[in-house]
Amino acid sequence: MDICIIGSGYVGLVSGACFAEVGHNVVCVDNDPRKIEKLQRGEIPIYEPGLEDLVHRHVSANRLRFTGSIEDGVDHSEIVFIAVPTPPQADGSVDLSYIERVAREIAVVLKPGQYRVVVDKSTVPVKTGEKVDATIRRYNRNAEFDVVSNPEFLREGCAVPDLMNPDRIVIGSASQRATDLMKRVYEPFNAPILVTDVNSAELIKHAANSFLSLKISYINAVSAICEASGADVEKVADGIGMDKRIGRNFLNAGLGYGGSCFPKDVKAFIAIADELGVPFDLMKEVERINDSMLERFLKKMRDALWVLKDKRIAVWGLSFKPDTDDVRNSVAIELVRQLVEEGAIVTAYDPKGMEKAREFNLISDKVKLVSSPVDAVDGAEALVLATEWKEFARQDFAEVKRRMHTPLVFDGRNLFKTDTMREMGFVYCGVGRP
Ligand code: UGA
Image 1 (spheres, protein in one colour):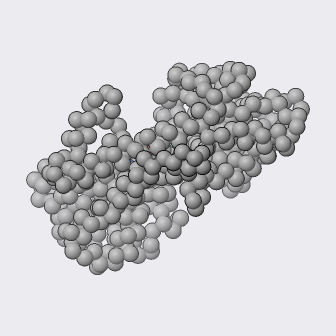
Image 2 (image 1 turned 135 degrees about the vertical axis):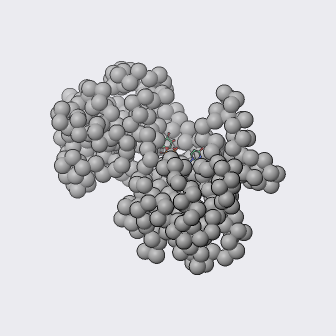
Image 3 (image 1 turned 90 degrees about the vertical axis):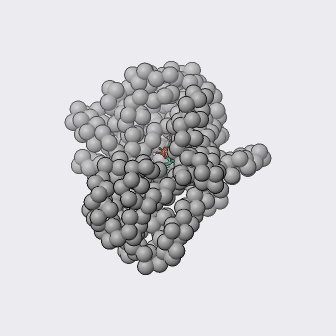
């Protein structure tokens, strides 16, 4: 099928590459000419395992191309996906101006007799589809199209496998013609397809991300009870997670959730509910618990080190989670920021996130970035694990201990084994662990 994707960010680019992988012809559009030039030169603007190979293969096979022109994309494709950013506004509500602009731009390039399915893949508040539909009609009375909601559930760091093997495909549609075309788009993925009305599909996305955030805040709240009682949150999570109705995923206690999705989507869901006149206090508490995690962790550091000013602290991890170079809304970055603010001397290492942290000025010049985990701990009075990259667990800890001034470890993601660390002579402090 001929598919156009407007917006070549995380969701747009990975979706485009995966649609090409299953045999569709894809044109990715973006209004940033530098990004399009880069992509046309074969440079991938984000780090995502497997993506570069997919893009190169399908560009060579002429199944994937990049353009700055919406008209070009819409002209050549019966299915037009919208995958542009929906950033948060100061009050937590969603800024839909990019979606609105794309809807207008699609409207003006739609030609008479040219039926198109306009698919919203961006995370949007319920009822956005209705507004996209009305906008296109307002700017082109003769347009022949249907608006469909098709939320994306990929995770950064494993976006390609998530997209290739989805748990489910949600298609929110009021038109049989559009639904049939969407089913053809997704047929090669062999995944269960749930067809709903547009509003329900839109709500599924916010409800899913909010529920996962709730799971994380729940276990983080339980971790405080574990600390107060001497229980081990990892064992508690294993014990409740073995119940199939609960599941072990997203029950990892730590510094809390970050990234460009959960914090924004929880805020948005609260704002959406407020606007609809049905306040969602449960999610406000989820957010409050998450916001408290970093301070709880810093307090433990102050309890052990007394004052943080002038302390040499090594930080492992800057990205918001492992296997990504994404440092947006990363709790690790916020941790570094607060340590620096308190006067600590921070040396940090991250396998992929250092370049973007510097490029976007997210960490102070005072922070020294080094090229290996072991270099980071040289002379350190404490080591903080902020992001659970697997390579951190594989370090030579005898060497780490030798290099450190004091063998004090604060594990913000419960990556290390408590007993092993203590046997090796580290003073070890995790989250919710005795
Ligand atoms: C999340 C969802 O998992 C995806 O399904 C969704 O498509 C995506 O948002 C989106 O809306 O675009 P993502 O933000 O890439 O994906 O990352 P996650 O793996 O969900 O992690 C989010 C945050 O939660 C990270 O900061 C992670 O460290 C934290 N987390 C996750 C925990 O603190 N504990 C856990 O047990 C799991």
